[in-house]
Image (cartoon, rainbow, N blue to C red):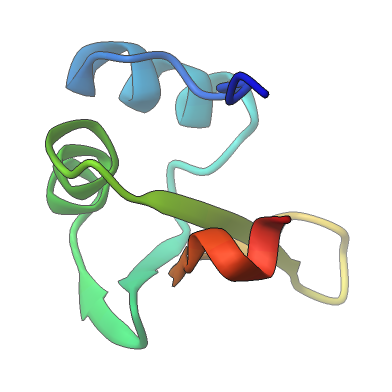
Length: 77
């Protein structure tokens, strides 16, 4: 079974994708550690791991947090 990638495969592409989703003011987390958007995008692109992205919205519906957590292959299957 092939893995379907929903995010672009370059750091710039991921950043553009997040910008198009309105994540400019969001706080980014990778495995529960707060980081910048560039570091979060870099973690997705450089690592040979699957990340589940979770978009947390505020009271107005704007994206307030982007949380990325590694998902083990056993959890995906």
